[in-house]
Image (cartoon, rainbow, N blue to C red):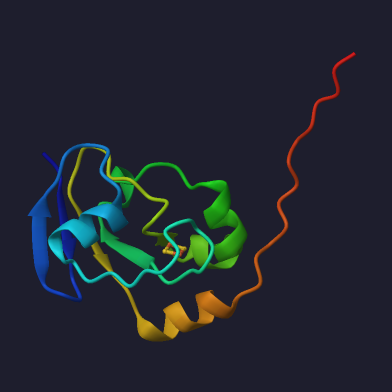
Length: 116
Ligand code: FES
């Protein structure tokens, strides 16, 4: 069973494989800020301090809201990220959260294949 360690609130929990970071934070009072739960507000932005390799793939909503600049620095959205099969430790930072919250989302072009 993977563990999630919430560094800011100094809490650590065993969670099932494939758990949502935000859902586990809400369930066990990990205190990760949140608001919309849908990848829009940016309140749940966090950085994986350990175990980045145990997070699932970046979602379209994260590409929109965080853009490459925040993704490259290792930030993810808690409501869009799931733990795979290893331990992770996450932290968040008020200053980063405020910047991400006001960031205008990128427009992501959907690849459209025309069928004939
Ligand atoms: S809670 Fe709003 S983006 Fe995650």
